[in-house]
Amino acid sequence: MNEKQQKPVTLLTVTGLFAAIITLMTAYICHIPYGANGGYIHFGDALIYVAAVILPRPYAMAAAAIGGGLADLLTAPMWAPATIIIKMLITLPFTSKNGRMLNGRNIIAPFLAALISATGYYLAQGILFGSWISVIVSFAGSAVQSGGSAVIFLVLACAMDKAHIKNKAELILYQ
Picture 1 (cartoon, rainbow, N blue to C red):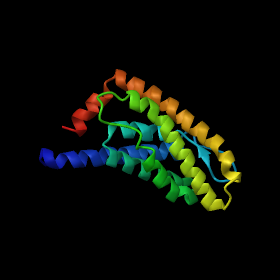
Picture 2: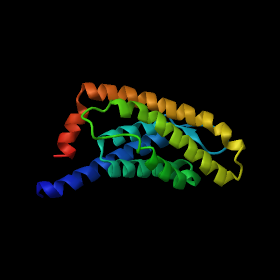
Picture 3: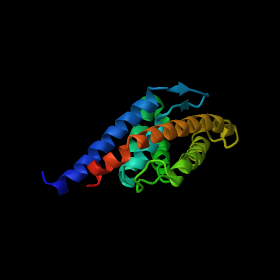
């Protein structure tokens, strides 16, 4: 296989690995159910953020949608359609174009992603349950999940920047 053919295969492989890890982190590792609506707190979003910083946008969106969607199919299937859309959208505030994982945009991005996630799940709950007022309490769970994921992402990104992981990944993915 020549280099031109190898690049998409490498990107798809890394995307698949991210999707698998996101699924496991979301569905099984630190999976804490809360509320009567089938929601749960998890830290899979932290890995979505890492994918959004390392992979090109379409691949990060695919990893997020597949990983989050599979996790919901395994734990709370009614949420899968909304999750697929929301997880793709939360990758948008991040950039993968800088040589470092932590830059101004990526430090702010987890908090913008939290707003996208909370709004998306608020809309999904309103549609699923037919009530737009009772689901407001879900914002607390969204805040805990998104806040925890933001902290984990910032710690991981700091450690990965010290190890120059982004530069090493760029050599593999973009060359």
